[in-house]
Length: 173
Image (tube, rainbow, N blue to C red; front, side):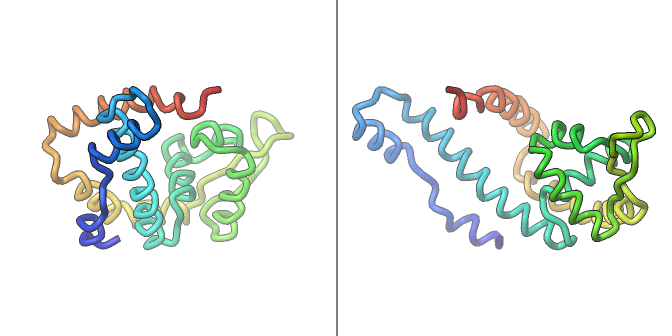
């Protein structure tokens, strides 16, 4: 995603949120609705940009997250631990591992703790891929938030945590 696309992206406005709320005869807070709508739109754009970013390294966001999770925990986890840590299904982990295994970035082996179980292991090639991409990856992450001061980043992290606690409102019955 070029930076020009960032500037050209039409953001929903407070007036639009207020009009929609009035249209449906509701009493919702337009600013709260606008924050949520913009956050979801930004999340979608960020997801698309992340796929482009990780594609540079021959990975998808999911594949990168799985490799990074393995590296963070010492290079080995069961598929169910990976699924829980990544917040995805076992079937999703199986698909990710299948692709990464074909590329030699991970391997499956029997669990030392439970011979019937399987663990996924980060290979030397997988660790090398992470190490090689790290300089550009972290430079780009830093650039993405480069317009924020250190204090603003701290505040943003606190706000994201509070928003994350409210995400369940979208899926609860």
